[in-house]
Amino acid sequence: MRIKEDQSIRAIIEEEWKSMFQEDRKELRRRAKEAILKLQMENRKSFNKKKTKAKRYEAGELVAIRRTQFGPGLKLYPKYLGPYEVVRALRNDRYITSTAAELHETVE
Image (cartoon, rainbow, N blue to C red; front, side):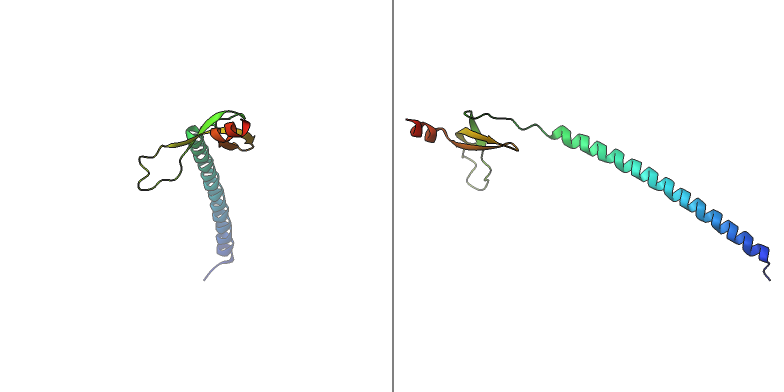
């Protein structure tokens, strides 16, 4: 036979257990968030360490462009195309170029 006090004690114990569970869960979430933020910061540092700033060119400079097509039989081709002359600098490190020979032909 159960007594009323047993049920009230059981309810109090359950409430205490729930509150402890909630606190533990909050603590685990806080620690996980700290670990994630720490790892993200380390990843950001290592990623940025490998990146180099893009070189800025002015109009009139001669540049060579790295060949991006690879495949069989291209091993003996030059690695760079050019020379090209920068006609105009666009934003986001983009440039309008023309071959140096084309510019000299049109000028003469």
